[in-house]
Length: 562
Image (cartoon, rainbow, N blue to C red; front, side, top):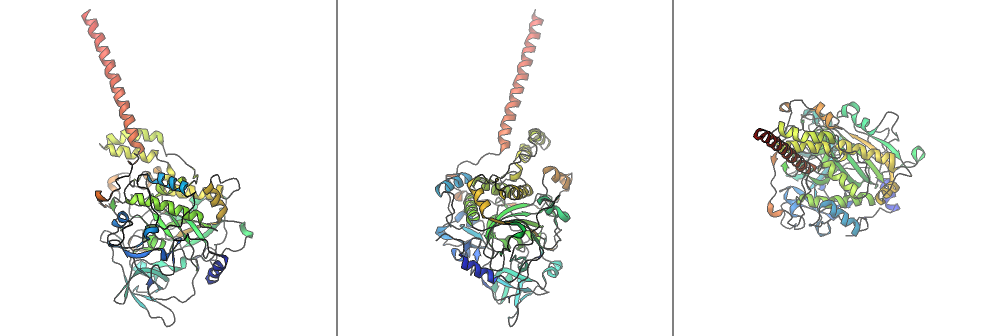
């Protein structure tokens, strides 16, 4: 497959001419073009991230003719996926994930090869667009187009909240893109994505003011779950005097922060993901690929599975979509060239191949949604500032204290890891904030970039846009901004863990026969080494005390004998 290239000027101009609306004063644009209600193939005439839809084929995950990615396919059962075939990103089975990325960088001179991910989780084979009727029972077209009957996907039995009357009122009459499948004349919709989220041109330039920060933008109005969609340009090349920048066809590297849930005390930390793609001719970003790392060892009550998947599926799936249970925020690096987003996408696809084979496991303290992505960006050469652990001293005390208190070594080790782990690899909000500050304060300055990828990123950056994405109303409680520290987490959650609202999940057992036999042993958490050191210290201390006691006893006995 030829490597995807930046569109030539004539093609970009044609795409720009097709963008018919502009974002004004940080409000989303409205598309005035007629909207077809006839379902179409999910991959037809569209890009999936940075890759033409023709690079993939739609199939069920239990297909018999998909030999390239058996480990990845296993997790999705009979669900709908898109597979890339033999030209997809591979991996080196005898290397650890990040070592594999380093070796690949050296072999390719740190240049993307135009290879797509092995698998995308698209969930549905078709797409339909139109205005959702007030009763949510049909998609309405314009002109002579007939209404298309719609049935919403069923709520998963384990999903405690779902689409309700408030959802119906929220979406009624608005332009919608839905993923689903046409059966017996009815379109069974799995996602509902607002078309007016499109950004046809850069939003109004509004740099951070004195007293403002990325953190304050996220925290505004308690996280802004009920606020309207909004976008704001924080930086643009050339500043306020620069010409308008149409976004059609522009590559992007986006950092996503999902807020805290309102009904789960284990989810105050939020979630983090990284997306790549191009703005479509109307400024849409619904087909960007989101790289979402999630625990493969358990079955999500909302049906979430770790994967690369389209933005509209990630955010707006009726069961698993992030926008149905918390507010979200996005920092979009608008680029003039796709070389950095493409390099990241191929690197993280290699990491996903190792993840699906369970060469390494998801751990909430470090190897999590933030940690895996941030570590990969650092491996690529982006020197994202390190902040250190929240309290290494407390970690040393917490290990034995929690182990004794809970009568569980695992509890002590978990406490140690949470307090010792680098914060940008532990907490999604810290990762998001640190990356944003590094983009704004270092990589946009002449003396900032150090490594090759940083120089490319700085050279290609055209703008940095902050996007606020509201939570969709439903029967679920509204969420809020996520926490930035473990101490803040303790203040939010009930003091007595017995009072926590927790959603239990079942295990997902990966077949031993499908594991990679060549995979090196997984790196142990820091707490394991700390446990050995603590145990050695206790043994040495115990031995010293025993020897001192023995000597004292010998002296006493000697005096008695004399």
